[in-house]
Each structure stands twice: as structure tokens, then as C-alpha cells.
Image (cartoon, rainbow over all chains, first blue to last red; front, top):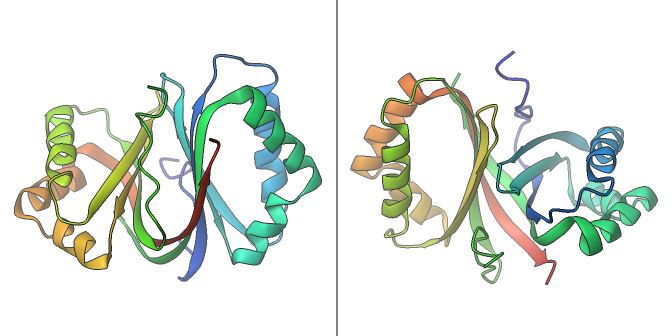
Length: 110
Length: 110
């Protein structure tokens, strides 16, 4: 139960996309599209999991994990995701940073 | 102002430590030590910045950025940080995962 918010720990190396963002105050469909994007990402080839937290000020970090760079490129250019990305730029985010990383080692409490 | 929660965008490659965690309900000095660790990390050689968000359920993600793996190792073995890590294991976290990653590319909204 306590571990449901955590993504799995695949064997390294794999990839992480760290998306840090500050939301605007505009809602404007964000929750619906955000949930849809998670659902859609889970269906993509190479998707390994995701973790997400947003605090009350609207600042959040979402990390999605992928098998390789090709999976990340495919997801970035997915038609429905592209529309969401455009809406994000114009409506939902004051600012964001995306960092694509190679996970080299990992460990957990238990 | 809106960008103050974001870490800088140094030239790649650099390193990211993604620490996802679920807090226990025990407070027990967490806020004080957590703030102290951020203050202390900022003084370490090779520290490039950090981003952090925790939601109301107690699930949070902190990403700290470092020049190289040596800086990460030094910070992990820092005496005061080691005490905090031990207390974290026994008191503050239900669960956590740490992933050490090499940042290969990054971009931002603006």
C-alpha cells in the first residue's frame, strides 16, 4: 500500500524524464488531460513507471521512467501528447523544465 | 519570481539525484533537519541546485543536481548528512527510492 506511489526499480541503465513545473491558477481541463496523459503514457512501448508530487503552491515534479531514448522520443511526438504539450505551454504552466537523464544506479529503503 | 523553485540549467552533462519518498506521520524534528540539509548541501562542492515538491498525502520528490559523481559521493558520506540519513530510515520515511542519473539534455518553457 505504502509503495503504490513509487515506480518500480528496473535494472540499470534506463531513462528518467524529470519534469518540474509551476502551474498557472487556470484549471481549464488540466486534471482531465493530465489523468489522460498518464493513462496514455502507460500504454506506450518502453514505459517503466512514473512518480509525481505537486505541493499546495502549485509547484510539482513528475518523473517518468523509460527503457531507452527512443521510447522517450516516441512519447514526446505522440499526436495526442503533442496537443497536451501545446496547451500546457499556453495555459497550464507558468514555467517548466524538462531534463532527460540516464539512470545509472538506484536503491531503496526496503 | 515564478522561477525561484526551479534549479538552474547548467550545460550537460551533469548529475541528478532523484529522491522520492513517503513520509511517516511522525514529525520529530523533520522540518528543522530537512531545512538544515538543504542549507548544508548548498555549501558542498559541486552542488548545482535542487527542486522539491511534497503533496498533502506526504509523498514527495526532491531532485538535487551535482557536477559529477564524486560530489554526490562526498555529500552522501558527509558526517552530518549521514546522521540525517539514519534518522530518515528509522523515523521520517515509510519508504524511499534514490536514483542517481546523468542528465543528458534539458530544455525549459522560456
